[in-house]
Amino acid sequence: MNVLPVVIAVAVLAAVALAIVWALRLERPYLQPIAILRAVLQLAVLTIILVGVISNGWWVGLFLVVMVGAATWVVLRRLELRLPDAPTIAGIIVVATAIPVTIVFLTGAVQFSPRYVLAVGGIVVGNAMTVCTLMGRSLAAGFVSQREEIEGWLALGATPRIASIRSVRVAASTALIPATDQTRTTGIVTLPGAFVGAIFAGASVIVAAEFQVLVLASILVTGAISVALLSWRFGAPRVIPIGKLR
Image (cartoon, rainbow, N blue to C red; front, side, top):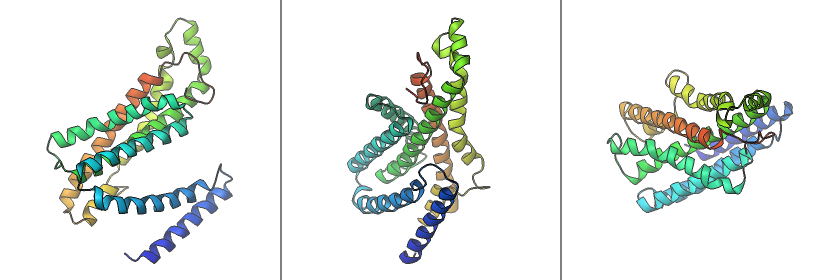
């Protein structure tokens, strides 16, 4: 693939995104082109790093730790949580990632090697981050919009967890929609990255499909674990927040 046409295409796409968001008067319209620029820089650095990392188990483990840390930081900023909440969020991401990844390798579905651990683990960590962010934002909004209902249940003697259960369930369901829809429409509406990437790497269509199914199933399990742990941690507020999760 020629580099120059790629650079031109990315620059044009970034300009189009900026123009549309700017015209709609959305908040911080510069975020989209900056996100594209960051993706370019980060992928460039990642490419250089992976040359020496991908075959070394210790370096792969360290790289996954860095990914968890970065994902935790993104969730903290998006949900406006405090720094003391970082261990909780990191723990949720680690547990939600470790369980499906362990199942994939223990069953022998994928060969246990550093490169595959990095591939599966990296995808799953990213989706755990997305689910945590989506649920946290929906939960905060639900607590505020359903404040009177929650306070009414509390006044009747319900526990904070019971009083907030409708908001929690709605937020959890909302957070799982993207991964669920992606799985349901794979091959019909979307061609997932893992599938296309495996084919580009030289794998057969059947092997690529098998790998993609494993990834999608892992993502769904990760999402379910993430919303369950978030519900346990933030689903019983003693004080209804105003626009924030905490």
